[in-house]
Image (tube, rainbow, N blue to C red):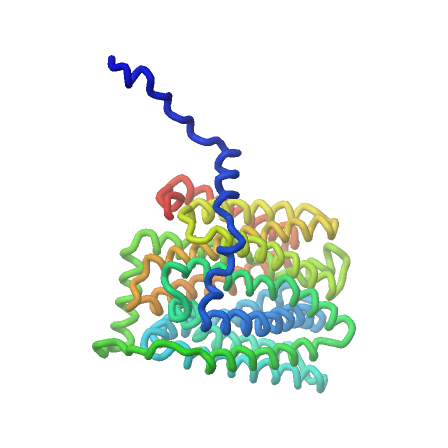
Length: 431
């Protein structure tokens, strides 16, 4: 045996859990958190979206509590959520084709303008005391239609504002601004609802869309290049669906996303009823629940953004799939408002890990020519299963109990997460 071999140091042991946590801490950098804001177009998008999403969450919170005040029915909360999602199934795939054929900025300006008109319309009905449950159902369907065309264009618009290497950071910042608004907007909406009435929540939301429309018009974008060869809409749809069906990773992630939308986050639908019937609160309690979820999601998004160009997205995604149902199950078992807020905070954090990592991995593995259609499938499953989740949990809360409904959803999601971890371990290894 050689002398060099005898004197060679023994191999270093693999770092334990503490070592991995400390290694993760060293990768975080505040200077990396806002990398995407170096791009002028993204800066315009970021700040305008914060304004608009603040209004959106005010309206969403006020709308849920107004529905419950008008009907006193958890099942009707689920029905409204279901109706808002029907356009997702009807139009989302077609909207993905549109996002590949038409300048995405143009699509976004149109959809944002429609949403602004709907917000002002429901504000007028509320101020005039003409608002009825069926008005809200119609408004939910029309808003869902606008969202169906908005979502694929919005998701695939990211790479028109930043370079591919900074896409994950931009997606994390998108989540951060979304959840900054969710951390503040619902609480503000609950307070405004309690002191001034729901009409002002809807009016503020309508005005907030002006910021996004103005920012989109100010952007300087590369010229839009239409598809080289014109083909039928059905052919384009078929190509997008075929790519998703034959790509194992994208297929797995989109399937996971459907399960999360159906069972993982559906308990949020019954927050207005939970605030009153379980926590014995009011509109402000409902707003605080929504805001706690938003605060947790915001913290998660900022932590992801601070990691910069990291390469362990699969592990974070897997962790989130277990953390979310555990937090939901614990939430179902407590009756003390402060602890409920802490658990909803944890659920919001886990939710962002799932949605952010799923989005980044799907877009990373999507070719530019098919991105709109693939994100159309992604958003179809993401938004399309949410109304089904809202419908089943609303009915379960009405006919069983609110606690039982949340526990059923958490149990099914936890079973799905365990099955994914056992039978699809390749997901954890994704960079």
